[in-house]
Length: 178
Image 1: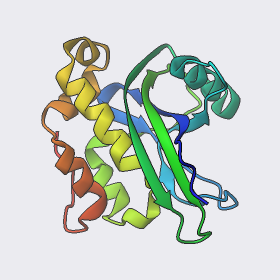
Image 2 (image 1 turned 45 degrees about the vertical axis):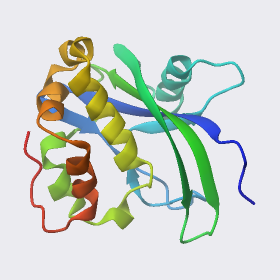
Image 3 (image 1 turned 180 degrees about the horizontal axis):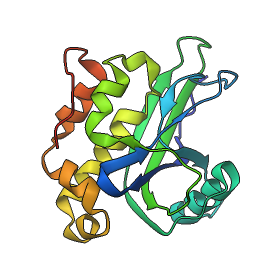
Image 4 (image 1 turned 90 degrees about the vertical axis):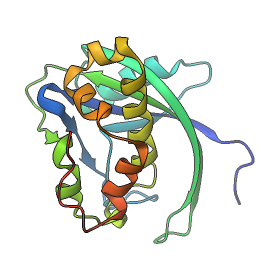
């Protein structure tokens, strides 16, 4: 059964200097897309809860980190079927960018995302590429966001949304240039 109305979710990307992005691998026991790599964290919003509040709450609950800076930069709707479970997700995803100075996290350089992924889209959650596209497009088009996230802005300006899709779809790509 597919929900007629999409469930609202926040998708958080925690970023750092030098164009680094914090990724996480979902538990293999997750009922949707278990074992796949994805953005830093996600969260269903509570009734009446703003996306930024849900993002801050989830960062604390899941990673025990506090965002030093946080911006809601866009949204998209998607529907995906998990090939392993057959379950369907239908979501309206709010994309959030955040920074933290927490020293308990490890970072993946955004510029080498194609290398990290090796062109294997099946190792990613289905929302990762469209959420990354929303984040990069927002930073490229909004000078204020570019000033807040300069390391990511240097990558975003040189990328088009097709470049992001290519990062997960084309195994012949060996590096993401910024």
